[in-house]
Length: 226
Length: 409
Ligand SMILES: Nc1ncnc2c1ncn2[C@@H]1O[C@H](COP(=O)(O)OP(=O)(O)OP(=O)(O)O)[C@@H](O)[C@H]1O
Ligand SMILES: [Mg+2]
Image (tube, rainbow over all chains, first blue to last red; front, side):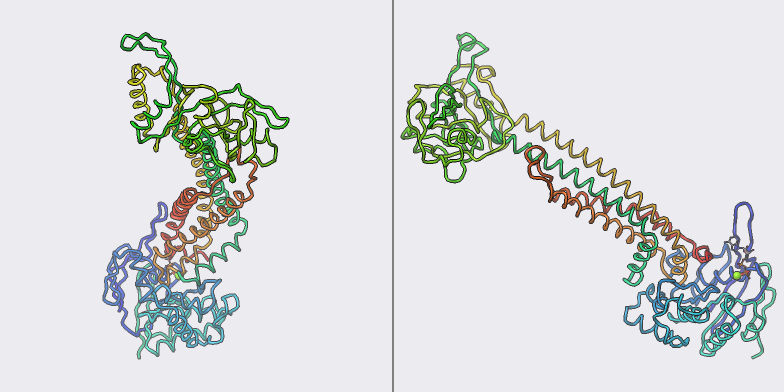
């Protein structure tokens, strides 16, 4: 599903060059649940953004669902994000003025799904994350845990090949965080491929595979005995 | 974009930045009012002046037989040239593309009615004179006709001011006035018109008689002047040349002798005014356009701020798969909507000003005209300004790096 070889990412800020990724090789197959761990500044988010086609690597090869991603233009990359990727962020990243339903509809909107089908699918997905009764609420009227569920519903609504979550419980109290972790476990059980960045060793245990990053390189890659 | 995001976001922006949006829209409104009102005033003024010029008639040349200045076939110069109705008839025959009318004038005869005594300019002409010189009878009356001419009837057509002086507010048509003690029947009164140039007085103060009656009464053989009119202004020079040629042959003077018959070509002034007003309107339009462009710069600025403030939202949209060109279209559309709103408001103001424009001023500066030309050019200009003003902020929005945009918490 994901096949990365020799991925390097260099940030040039003024005169200083930061090599955030220095030659990452990573293969992820269908229905894997990968936890990415590592110290702050090690390049976890950078890797995630490259996987999600939100960012482009400086060099290296990247094949997503059989298609080479390198060298595609911004409009094509947007299309890939829309079709194949679902993002869940630490700070939710919901549109503040839009309702839960409208937020979840967003990827369908950009994917050109007709209005009726759009709201049906979005409502269905909100029900699946347990927010059937919060459809018309705006983010300010929701708790952190609920906002993150909306974000997860939005990530899932276009049936992406892979869901990428960057510290999804980082802004939540332990109770809501736990519920979110359980939700991810359910999704994985239902067949969803997931890559999740986390600092929480407990969460990492739930995953089928733990990838450890340090200084822009994978230093450990361990599969849980199934 | 669906109504969902687009209009809600717009309203959101407007609410967020009430003052700024208001000022921006006002800038466009002001610009629109400047362009459309200036051009409308220019057009109104031009119409007014053209109308005044046409008080004398359209594409008219007035010709005064005078003295020769070039010896011709043994005849010396300084010889007097006299034109008769026969010569006018010959011109009519030989230059069918123009119309001709001779005119006899006199200012030594007295009109009398009750206690009023006046000595107006008398103009004795043929029926066609009225149409050529824009002498239009007010309803209830008529101009001199062929029958009057044939029978040398003692009838008179009065300029509106002359009528007022003789009859006051009374009805004049059907009444009699005495002209040097000869009774004349009033057959019509001229409809009031504006006339900015004249020879031997304005038409409003004249008394118009059938030329046959005039000649019988005063024993005149020769016309004082004659006028001719072409369908198009462009035909005037050729008609003029032919007049010299034909009259030169009949009256024995050199066709190149322009002093033999003095001519006043009124189309010369019109030509000047057309060029003058073309320039004048372009000038007004350019001044107005600058105002509009300044308004456009305002819109562009506010859109830059909007892009700045919505950076995170743009990042979110890009992350879930909005294409950059879609983001660009959204901001462009938003700018165009703002511009259109300002423009529509501007048009309303302009139409309002035109509607309440005091009609008393029409005589002096004309009434501003909301012609299709004004509206179409202003709308086109607005569209272009909206596109340009929106393009750059929208482009900046679409070029945002989603990762960077999302980091702004
Ligand atoms: N846009 C950027 N410009 C310059 N340097 C950057 C940029 N983004 C990240 N970096 C650098 O790249 C390195 C990796 O950053 P990254 O965000 O991937 O770390 P991380 O592992 O996600 O850390 P954390 O656990 O704190 O989120 C860091 O040294 C960071 O300073
Ligand atoms: Mg990070």
